[in-house]
Length: 172
Image (tube, rainbow, N blue to C red; front, top):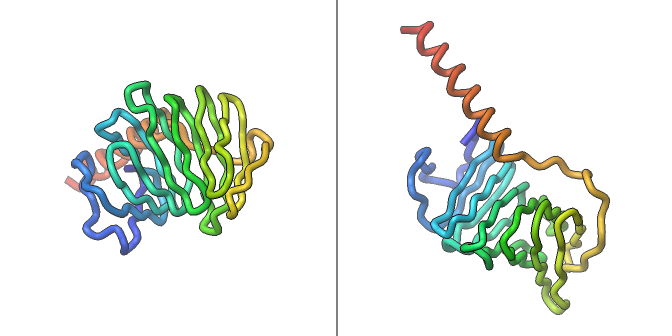
């Protein structure tokens, strides 16, 4: 977790490095990294509200997320208000608005979008798709949303730890 501020609905707040039980994680700001037992890794940038359902399933009511899903975790699914994203072993990101509108960008591999009463849609590496609140999807321009990377989060975490250490040392 980097510069995290939890919302009241996340009580009790999880401890850094602890195993998470299924349930809601809601953040007002900052970034959290979650590693699932399935091997999938997920970044969520606040404001965001996630409901951890299982090692293979998450619900994202709103927020910006990025995921790396290795081959053994294929089938990892993110439910949103307007569609389900089923990963086929890849790296992707999505920005989900509270209205249900979303943008999905696949960096590598392939995902499937399943919307109610619509055929599934495959999204391949390099593609960006916009999805409206009703689940209708269309191609979108690349680069309209900036997604955090795992390396950026690691670097920010190291900088924060060094700053905390310097503050502790000054006050000791």
